Amino acid sequence: QVQLVESGGGLVQAGGSLRLSCVASTNIVSFDTMAWYRQTPGKQRNLVVSLSGRDYAFYVDSVKGRFTISRDNANNTVYLQMNNLEPEDTGVYYCNLFRSSASYWGQGTQVTVSS
Image (cartoon, rainbow, N blue to C red; front, top):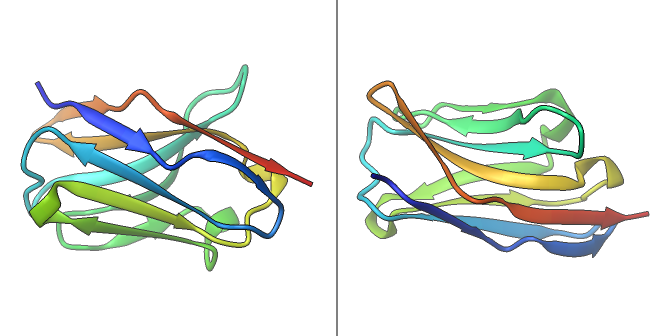
């Protein structure tokens, strides 16, 4: 069973930055797809950004140019650098690892952006 632990969330003013981290309990291998999702109260969990095993990054339009996903396989960690944050970025951010048709989730970290 893979465990993912997120950290780095918090309260920040609009225009500020945060870096989220997700540490996996297993080795992150080159064919794993890592992703970050965001969920707000009463809404479904939505994809924000993903990074495939071939290092192809997909960003939803609302975060392009502001968010950057990266991975450190040696330390089993994936990061989400979030710059120029907007109030609409507020939510619980979940780390996801997709491997061999199995999907694993972290417990989430809260990001709150004040206007």
